[in-house]
Figure (cartoon, rainbow, N blue to C red):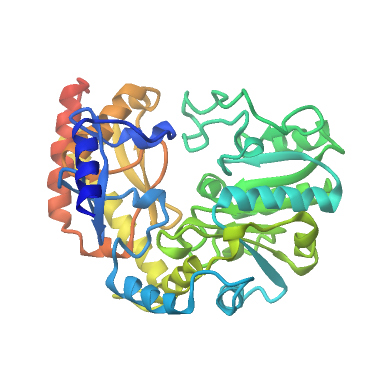
Length: 431
């Protein structure tokens, strides 16, 4: 162990880069160096040099109780006495789904490690049901080829000049004239109708990223699903960010939208890798023929983690009826604190924070002068990092239950220093 620790320390000191990864994690920088993290506790993480940071990244959303929560860790460790993998699925999987889907008695669930796998499975089930391979999507729905090919920057605001620049246009399989991948960009019913009419007979699946629900309404989404069903498409709500975070089953269930399938992921297990594809019994009967499984779909540690996470979140906490309601209160307060800091500095017209879908997520909102300026936005993240605050930009940030203990005056002071530094560095003109 000492040898391993010394080796890692030496690697860090030499600033060697061994990890091949997407560029978004490279945004976490201090002194223009990418951060490497060593540990976390509650709502804080530490880098490899021992510096602490208030963490609003939460592993991009999975951590929902907090890092290294004592009860969570102890209960999972006790369940490990049952083993990590059985020859097939375990009673823990069955009991977990029975509890999760108690308000959906006609539904079944399939287990995966990531939501990208679950969305792929949904596409396959849809194609088996109606024989069509084309897809209409709205939002970021995973990183597999047909999910990400020819994508927009979906997390950007509707009016952002950066939003509609197509990305991932090369080396993507399963995308072509017989398997069109189409983007519902403006979330207007007229444009969806045009896509359906122009591609009649080729489209088998419509998938919607529930994060974008804040940019439209349940009424419009219900009509969109109805239009797609009339055209013979199966409908999928990708609740990767939202299911288990804004509520146990997410936006589509809460608003009774009646999607054919729901993808749940991220926050289900407080950081353990699990995703569940939910659909009605008849549709999910295709699972065996569709080969919806993998070796590690059956492992038990993540189901232990998901069971414990749900149990903790279902309890009343503070004045809230349950953990999901409390998360909304926490995130709304944090967004207000960051906006208050921007107001004090005089840059609220340039950047502020707003809660998303009730507040368990929040996002930075930019004024017109900043919205299309990638350099200013990158510098803003570094300014926050230098003050020990980790946020996301061009993507929602996340909160956990442990953030209810945040000292909001301390957060305000840090945010004020970060915003002043950013305004000076970028020569942002403010009052």
